[in-house]
Length: 540
Image 1: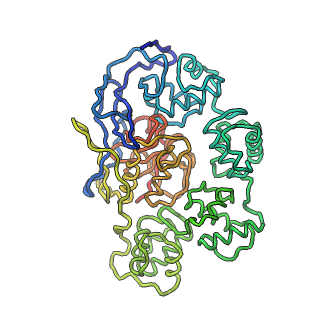
Image 2: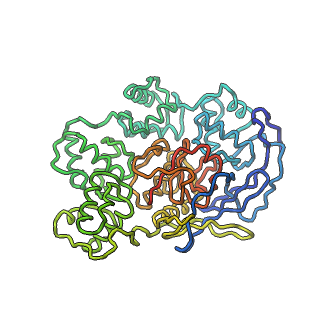
């Protein structure tokens, strides 16, 4: 094979080591092996353990491994390698890929993540987008010319410009359409044309950015922020269209009173509540997708659920206290596991489906004055309704010295005697079932994900009512318990600069990794500690 030596100055002193890892994937299942430097670590395999197994706290700082997918039974040489391939292509594993990925992340072509030695499809796509920006042939292969251009001090940052084509253009157009800046579904064509550029200009002008029509980092961040101003039916408007959808919201239980056509705060909050339960971006606007979802016979009706926080939740809790299903000190306005358990107990006692969701029938019965009181003594304790597990762990225990990472399926006791709930164990099991699924920017499941989409999908599958948020939105979601890096435990959400994942216990994490190109189960090492922003305890 033809080889050459990369410029060591460009690599900033990185030694060229062949990492001990190869990749193959069948469906969404794979095994994960860990390597770092010349010392090979044991393979990490996700399995399902009995309910007596424990979920451990994250290990202390100092774990520093680079975990990549591997093929069972393949012997890999991890000796030092002085030379790298002339052309970096999909499947190549070499230390220089770390530097390439880091540079692509710095320039905005690749989502921030812990760089790896694996040149996968996500890395190749990022290279293609750079080549497009630089006017080069878009082959996704990083040869000498592409390498030099990427590493150059004058390398261009990511931006969409007139004439560009790609899936990233389609994603931008779709969001512009739902915010009302593109008017027709046919405008979503994957081409950054005059119509799209003018829509971006209008978006920028409306939202206080320089209206240059260039879709760069600032515009991208704006599109998915809570502060974005739309160009669709919104707060303050009055029309028959508003009245029509108010009536639908009333019928679905999201809005009280009569439909009057005035788009006030109550209507906006009702729309947000509907969007969060119907797989919409939660922005409070009556955009095209939201109107389509409201018109659908499959629209999901209102029900308060795990993870919500509001005055309505507090009122629900006060009724549960009144009937003896919840202790008074738990009426905090946050719908946690104890509230879910109390609702399920109330439903069971009163002949309703015990799903732990506070829908119209449950709320109506609570308000009726005819509900049956709780006759048990343990009114505020968790029950099996909040600890049931869903999803199956991916991967099978390996042989030949493989150490298994166990994922419990019910309530467990973590390191230091801390109890980890069954809901946290269920979340980890759901996340583990998707190990090996491909990383795709903007994807929200069920079989491909980006980092935010993965956390969003897993939490909703675990019954946590949460809307889609980018990594920046996860910096302050407002209703979960904040924890430090050293306090992280299984089931917590970890937020680092530009990236989010689900802590799996034992010093590991499950996340949709752009650098690995798929959902992986890997160690929490120094990169995570150095880039850590905040941790969130969902289940307590």
